[in-house]
Each structure stands twice: as structure tokens, then as C-alpha cells.
Amino acid sequence: MKRKWRQFKKSYLLYSFKRDKVAIFSFSVLVLLLLVGLTAPLISPTNPYDANTIDIMNSEIPPAWSDEGVGEFFLGTDIQGRDLLSTMIYGLRLSIIIGLGAVMLQAFIGISVGLVAGYLGGKIDSLLMRMADIQLSFPYLMVAIFISAIFQVVFGIGRYADLAVPLLVVIIGLAEWPVYARTVRASVMGEKNKEYVEAARVIGLSRRIIMVRHILPNTLTSVMVISTIQVANAVMSEAALSFLGLGMPVTRPSLGSLIRSGFEYIFSGSWWITIFPGILLVVFVMVINLLGDWLRDVMNPKLYKG
Image (cartoon, rainbow, N blue to C red):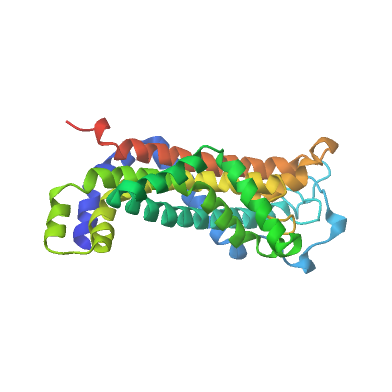
């Protein structure tokens, strides 16, 4: 363990990170937001799921610094009378959980398909990649909306609302797995004819062991870069689906459902219900994308070879 830590301290990755102010800033903000979201029950002023802390008479109270604001509600309240700051913290937590869960599902499906297609080749490769190409030919949000609509018909509106989190993980995961599949397949195609793979075949290792233990570790660099960007895409997908009424219900706050619930009131003066969650969503997605861009540049050998 100590040896790996010493190697990491001498790595180009850490060296590049220390010299890039944008990467340091993005990483710091991302860690802060993750800590805030994941510790929501501990740090939020109120619990937006607890009916005892919600009073409908407190609905649409403006932020504390405005003339009609109340010190108890720093960012104001939403249309249900919930403290907006607490609701945003819980909404961030929910968006993080959905984003990470969806990316894990995407990665599992995409890596499995990419490994099999790239290593076996032939008709299996053609079939799997044509399936991926067909899905990629449609905008991912359209695919997510289509799957979400099917799930609402199958489970019913009420049941769908109860199962919204796992269903959104599945919906977004099924909508974007081809990104992983094509990337992993390309990496496997470049690895499968190398000497270490030939040696593994000669000593009689099975295809599964060769793919999982020998080839897969050499594809993880590209997977790590993709995963960073895909988390941001998954969070945006959840927000878009919730805004369209196909994601989280208003009673279970995510950043997308908060933006949707306040959008119809924005022109009547209650701008804070939509603006503050929107700013938080933009900042969260922006720092992930900035960190992903830096990671992609660092992991690209063409940028620092020789």
C-alpha cells in the first residue's frame, strides 16, 4: 500500500493536478458538494420529508435578505412551505445517488458488451455493435423519455412515484450504455492480439479469465475518463426527466423536480424557487465537466509523450 502511495505521489497525474488551478478548484468544489449532499440529514436545517416541519402558511417566503424575508429561511421557501436550503441539500443528495447509480449500471452493461464484442469479434461483434449504433442514432434523452413513459404505463403513476429512484437509475443506465460499449470494444481490439494475451491463451486460461483479469484492467483508463463525464450527463438527464414530469415527483425533491415545481411561479415573483436549484445544478455539472476535461487531457498520451 505504501509503495502504491509513493508511486502515486511521483505520478504524472498528481504532478499535472498540482499545476492546474482549474482542476484544483473544480475538485475542491466537487468534494464540498458531495460532502454536503451525502451528509444532508446531518447538516440541513430541516427535514423536507418530515411533515411536522412543514407549514403551508410559510409557502413562497422570499430569501432572508429581501424585505419580506424571514431569518429562519435563508433562501426562502418553496410552494409547499419547505425550507428551500434544506430541500436543495436533500435534492442534491438524491441527484448524486441517481447519477452515480446510473453510471454504475451504464458501466456494467457497456463494459460487458464491449469486452464480449471486442474479444470474440465476428457475428457477435457485428450484432452487439449494431444494437449500440441503433440506440446511439437516437438522442439519449429521447431514449430515456421513451423508457420512462413505458415504465409509467407498466407500474402506474402512483407506483412509479414510489419507485422513482431505482427506476430512474435503470432508465438513465439503459439510455447511455452504448458509450461505454464502443469505447471498451475499441480498447479490447487494440489489446487482444498483444503478447500477454497470446501467452494467456497458450497456458490454457479461459476466455472469461483473459477478458476480466488481463484485458479489462488495461481499458480502465478510458472508462474512468468516460465515467466522470457520464455522471454529469446522468444528473442532467435526471433533471430533464423531472422537469418534463417523468422523473422525481414534487414530493421527493431532486434538483430537477425543484426547478420544475417553481418554474410556473417564476413570473409571478417567486423566482428563488427555480433560480437557486438551477444555479446549484449548473455549478455541480460544470465542475464535473471541468474535472472530466482535465482528466481526459492528462490521460491522453499524445499530449505529453516525448
